[in-house]
Image (tube, rainbow, N blue to C red):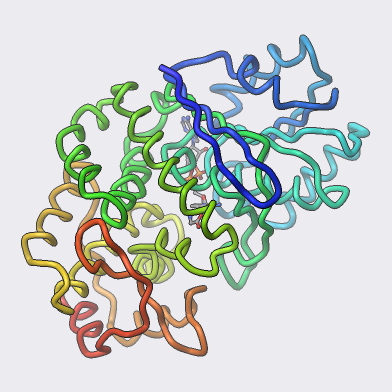
Length: 357
Ligand code: NAD
Ligand code: GLY
């Protein structure tokens, strides 16, 4: 199976290729314009997929590699400098193409290095986690963490292409697969109830790594994201809808300490909280909330947040990037498949949700 989608952006249009299994080098070679390639990966993905990609590319290109340590804690300026060092040591010029081989951390970092090295060079995304295939590799948000905040330093820099090979998901730990599935379910909840029904019917196949089902889900999510990015590349409006569940989720991640809850796990419990607030606003029904919880549980995701004092949670929410003039803005569901960004919710209802077990 091979699907090709197109992302339309202000700088250029680019393809997302979704395959069940492929020779990665063959797929990306047409999008490499110069002679030099720098593959950026991490110590985990290196062992799984680097050798074959590098060897295969070496037939036609001058191939260099840089291997970063694995983990969100290394998504920092220090390790961006490692990428610059490798580029300088290899005498890479303006026509070098960076290739991000890994999950969202590697993708965000490689994209940011590409956006800034020599004021901008080309890069390609080969996302190897479900989360990076359906979300972070598409749409050009790149960046690193600052000691005082996650993803605080970055740039919009679109890749030349995205290659999502379902075969890479066969080596992914189950917890990471579930975390990515939270983002898949998110698209259904904010955009498309028919996709929600499809997910309910196909969750067993997805969780047992049926590549046809996975490719179908990834393709649908990438198409939703491509449509949103084409409308609002710089997140002045509707792109914020992609943050459904994320404000509640960030509270969990920050409060519990990064790495305790995976991002997707926190988003899962956060989406249930956002759904409960939407219900209290009279927009969706109790049955809708139960339906959301069921599909998340089918993906082996948590639906209840840890105990967090509501005042502490409200304070943490103030650090959300969507806060405007001190006002928290949340993504809520007007109905299943239809989300809004709003600051117009009852504070007492929000506190009731934060206080509920
Ligand atoms: P990750 O990159 O840390 O990958 C998760 C783990 O899986 C890591 O240990 C990684 O080494 C391992 N891994 C990757 N591919 C593997 C494979 N095929 N087999 C076995 N193990 C594999 O995490 P993630 O969930 O992919 O991405 C999270 C990051 O993405 C965060 O930094 C987040 O801020 C960022 N993000 C960015 C955007 C965006 O629009 N740019 C959107 C969402 C998230
Ligand atoms: N992950 C949210 C976005 O790309 O806008």
